[in-house]
Image 1 (cartoon, one colour):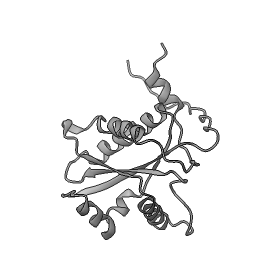
Image 2 (cartoon, one colour):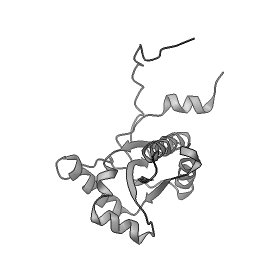
Image 3 (tube, helix red, strand yellow):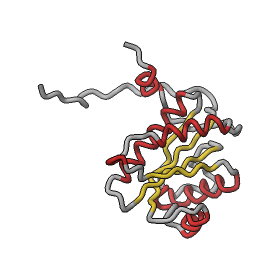
Length: 176
């Protein structure tokens, strides 16, 4: 049986080269909505998504992420993606990392289904511990204890979509 969701799971790839053109807001909103429907512990919905499309802030996040990652100044850990969706989890909720991870998975699958590329980029935890990002949360009216889980870099892929790596064997064990 051919299932479009399963097919999207098999076809989605991490994109490491993006075109600079901004996707339409309607597509970004659909992707965000898909993230909000991710499975979550006890239905608590203890996650938030911060959508960054403003270039100066996007570039600030990329520069800070680059420093945290230890790369040479000027490297873009978001590979030129014009959109960054930062996912946060309520650190007082025991499943916040898992819940945020599921949000990121939904974001990436939705992006693929809508013809956009994406990649999960780490170091959101370290960023959102920094005073600048704590102030950003306050400016957005976000109160409480929020931990950065990850970023979904989003945009139109530049070039060909990578082929899937062969699946490794001996990863499934059955007990009947």
